[in-house]
Image (cartoon, rainbow, N blue to C red; front, side, top):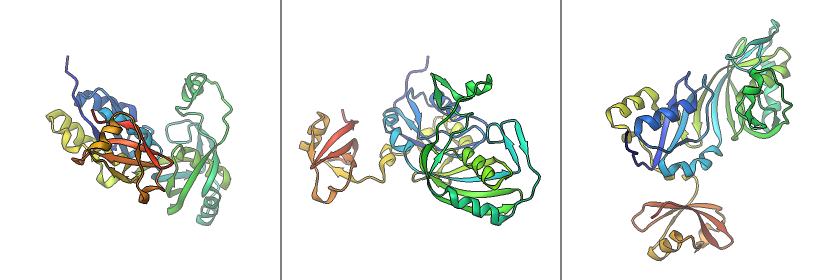
Length: 297
């Protein structure tokens, strides 16, 4: 049996259409020999784009990636509805009426800012211990309450009837499939999500991502570590605290260290030891930093 491999870092992978995010997690676990592999936000199997994977102790940082804003390019097909709100489902409605670019742009205005969104029934959200798509496949319907999400940016990039290409910047937990469906309801002819690419997850961008085929080859020949990114990139938008030897000892033992005057407005920080190595995540409580995740031995 293959021995476990140690790693502490992130992989910015460009996910192809077809496999699920969990498939890629499992393949990376097998291909690298690293036992603990997580992700920073799933993509549906048909979707492509940025999928950030966390290896080893970096799985403890996944919550900061999961909560980051996401940027998508989405193709919405008007006039056809499906039960899954995308191309994977069965067609449940058609409306041949032609709509205009002006109608699409007018519909977009109601979906900017904070909105209440109902997740798709075919999703991985759990109800009573079972995933919604499992219930849907056996004919069970569940009444879902709308959830607050934020659409920071929603722009029409192209209009080639009946397909609208949109750029969407949104908060974590936003379903682009639901957005496509709801736009179709607003316009009055129905719609579904025809294609989706995640071009950014937080500050991790598609043009910087390693294509899956390239990573797979690197796992085969043993050079995959060349694509491993520093784990502290998961918190790159938070300030850095550089500890002296005494402060490092305090943090290692779970004790607090003082907050510098120029950081009093920060709520979270990255901590580094005197050699510049990332060692902890700190959370501010008043005038003190408290270690919430420690990676130093």
